[in-house]
Image (cartoon, rainbow over all chains, first blue to last red; front, side, top):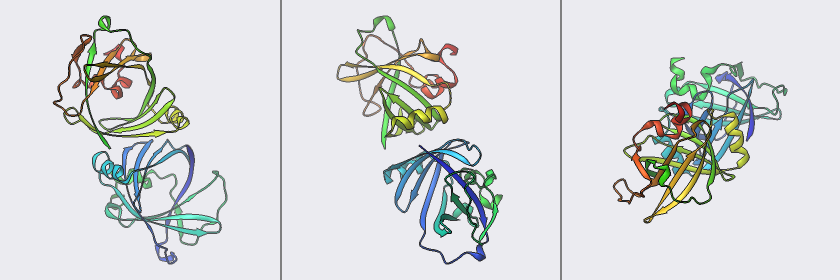
Length: 153
Length: 153
């Protein structure tokens, strides 16, 4: 088990720097309530991830590597449709790694940036392309973007 | 992934043979709908098991060994309460292994026997202690016994 402490922001698309090669991510949810069970395929590697209820900015997280063929079968047989499809770009800035997610498919048009922290009050510097914080806005949770895609927000 | 084909029966308790040493099982459900996500601790070994919707007698099953400490944390933090607690006895009969589950805790008094088959129409011989079949009765699914324990059936 690990603790995930994450902050999430919208993005000024026009201010983004040139982007590195992305990870191509496809993920689905078996359970999409406050406790989530997620199947993710990221550049041909597959993971099963369970996350507990968010308390403040923190969630318990359990992640296991699983066979790619299992993940593909789970996406088809167990997961709520549609899936989340996005490209993820890792951007270093002032000693932190930002994860920039550019959504595709049903959520095309949505771009968010996340930063993972060691503790809730850890200071960090925001790049100029980072806009409004949406950490507390449930509409931007991936598990909710399945039921209510970005185009309908 | 594997396919689970299982038939479930009630038991004539008074006809049971002398029982071998049991596995002591404690399990909880993170998602308890038609698709289930189960955390099980069986004799100090822990597993995370996902099962798809039942079609006939068959369900897709994905099972992974996980660290015991993860399972204990998941039971406390992610699972629906109460847990299922039972002792499982393996009984060989006419070339098949029967799993006899004697429930404890909230489901004390319930005893069921399950047999796993290779295909839905595989013939098997019922021991004399095996009673009415309940394979199609959702009340006897472990995920439902959490919400509606045996004492309330």
